[in-house]
Image (cartoon, rainbow, N blue to C red; front, side, top):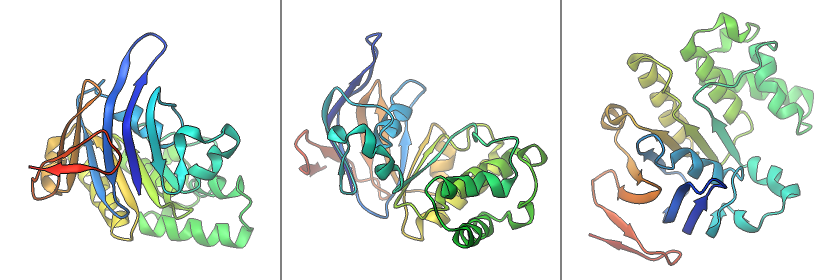
Length: 238
């Protein structure tokens, strides 16, 4: 469960990244987060991940009240989440296996479980044969699949993806989208930021659209529009 209750985020230079946003995401949903560059998509994902603090409102992710979570507990929140970046952010001096295993090593998983989880994650994304390669030996699409494997290797409840197809050609991007939907079908909640309407049209799901930091639209798969009030949990359907 994710609940944003009337949140606003303003940066030090005065930029208003999010303004009075309220919404709920149920466990197991697939949500597209749409909007032009600068609309607040990345900021919203960072707020959910505990990377940015809001100036107003409440943020609930799973059983964590993020807005009042102490810095020394942020790692507990992130253990329930995975994050996929547009630019992959792989360690170029580590192999594919080592890039993915690193996530588990820093949280002290036993070596045999690390090995099993990494292999399973690579099998899910279709790259088991790349286990000993380096990122430089992989295409852009393959690097993004590696990044996705890294994000899901610890079985997160929630997967956040920030423009994961932005650097890819349409065919490769569609493959990444299908992979994210496949992961969603295992029960993982997926929130994917994108500006590409063609991808949304190919695999329809709920669409939350931001405009200048405001929640402009919230459409379910069947195009019913949800208008959410600023009070947590209350919503109207039109």
